[in-house]
Length: 89
Image (cartoon, rainbow, N blue to C red):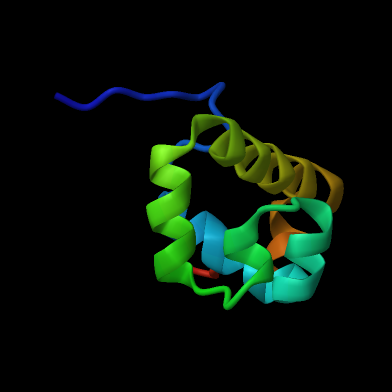
């Protein structure tokens, strides 16, 4: 069963895509400065971030909010050219 979610700005993005996009765009230091959680500041990796964020709803919300903010600020086309999201999206 396929459900369209036209008003959900995260529709079509996985948590992994969001983390990779934000870490590529801001860098781990920049991401850790914006959202102060250990998985971004101490030996950061996509794997450790996924593990933590899947178990921690408040932190996941902060990451998703930053992703939405960044997409809205730069727009989808600008986000593609700056590396925020992959060109296949």
